[in-house]
Amino acid sequence: MQKTILLLWDIDGTLIASGNAGMHALQRALRHTFAIDGSLADIDFAGRTDTWIMRAILRKFALPTTDDNLGRLFASYLSELPAALHNPRARVLPGAREIIAAAAGHGSIAQGLLTGNRREGARAKLAHHGLWDHFPFGAFGDDGELRNDLGPHALRRARETHGVDFPPQRTWIIGDTPHDIACGRAIGARTLAVATGGSTLDQLRAHDPDAALENLSDTARVLSLLTS
Image 1 (spheres, rainbow, N blue to C red):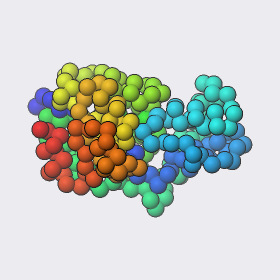
Image 2: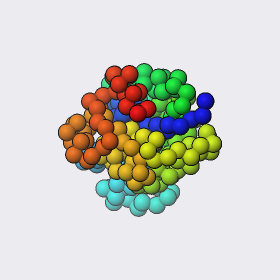
Image 3: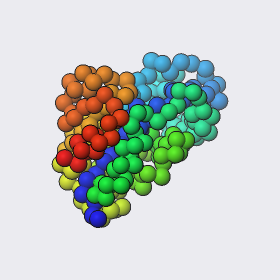
């Protein structure tokens, strides 16, 4: 069956909660790479790309934001991330596993990622929960520092993977922050916002997504919405 609907999933706060594993891994990476032991609590990670976050960290501690420093920090982060994910608060969010499986079995739905995580960070997080293999393509933080720049990369890879140009009215960006909604709007896609991250349902609705839900736990309802 030809794919006619495209779902592009955010990761953190949408599919999984990592128990602040990313922040802890970055703190350890900062310590090991630059001998700096400082808090990152004042940096807003939600909806940002890894590159944006790492530049913010380097600026906060007055370190040059060179490609070399970014590369060293990210390499150290990747080495710290698997251990950081082994914490009791890391989990798949309600309904996420079920809706991914239901969409995969639908026949007309293609699924990919649109995430601020760099690709190898996304792989580590999703593989930890057995979810990585569901997503044959995506757009990642490697593709651009600003989230709004990622959509065209996801659409191009969807076309390369499935041989289909997915129209905006049949493309969904699914995420948990206002940045996800804005990213969808930037490519004319429809947006589903879920209040499983740091934003409440009312806060998300204030940014006018096409749909907003408390969570993904009602599989039939979510699938019906995404195929409408």
